[in-house]
Image (cartoon, rainbow over all chains, first blue to last red; front, top):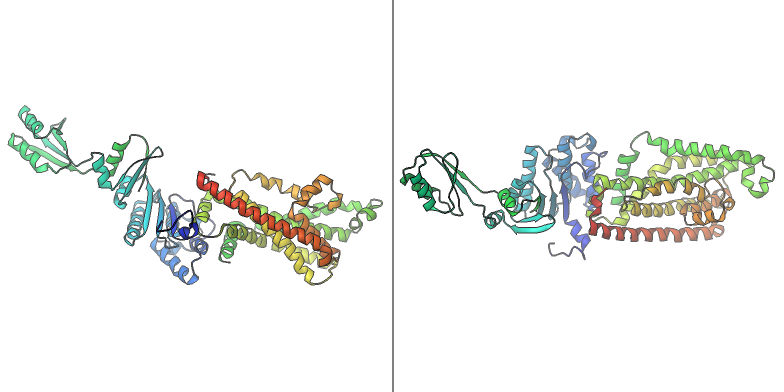
Length: 250
Length: 269
């Protein structure tokens, strides 16, 4: 980790890492928000001159400045989780472990946390995110490890995983006057074309064939009633990897 | 020192912040002291008691004997309570964070015990000092013996606390120690009866409890006017026992942390 051996140099490694986990645990309920941050600052041996402004900065970052002197037991769930985020950043870690960090958070706060995490990554921090929220993983992560039943199933960027699992853009065209001639034309266009009820023609293909497909339909006498393009998601890739319950580590 | 200050604040907020804690700090020890005193006081009327246990024949000296015992017990049992509270950090998830931080584990468990000791014992200690003064039973060979008495309770108690903390934070099932070290420690260490009056096997159990040695030093120095030379054996025994407890704490922390890394059990509660 950063040129350090965690087994031989655990102390040096611990100074450079921290953890943010979801839920309401991992802070002291009878201490105030500011006292919690101060307590953990002492464990990380942060000099007082550095610690005091950092505590205020972190409280502002997570929107708890006004509640800094309130006992944590009086916080809402979201406030407790935000304090946990500030606590995880108290030692300005080079590597941050995030375990379901947005679990139970309101949507705006979860969005703010994702912004913070993205900002940390931009500043060169290493972030290891464990999450079941695949949209979050897709948004934040450059490299994804897929774990299912305790086994490593696949790894790669979200785009690479989608490509590996055959998840491509889907073009869905609704034809108002579907006829045997049009059906024959689109089947001849590409073997991956699928005909769905309601005059819907679907094509899942690694290349963008939207223009070519609609042209083929029109040339066969078809009238377009609708056109929908569905981009693949990481969730599609994960579902394709396994039907079993999966854990995604990114 | 930073970890010590941090633990002191945490203990104060988490345990000692409430006014009701006065009950466990003063009222409860006082009730136990009164119960013991009034149970043993009729012994003074027993024929021949002055030959077998001279203290028992003098109600004021008997009370001083029992008060020193209660003071010593308050010191040591506060650390049992502290270790019990520490074990709850597994449930709050903060135990994982303590072990993820670079703070020295032995320093954390010592600081936790020391902070609990100071905050739990100061009130009863003040009461005991006031009582000894009022009873006029103190017989000290040299003023420096007060420092010896203080250290003879503090050092073994802190080592005892570190040992208990190191056991309780790794074992979810070690809470039975809380029960085991309550009345049995009170009895085997000679808190309310002189050790010579106890059966041999109980004396053997008491000899491995640091409270026994601490009480021997405290009573010898404060009530019997013994000096350093008289108490050298007890003090050496306490030093060895304290060292052994700290060593055992280090070993327990290393083994416990290695096991926790292997099994991930710190997340379980």
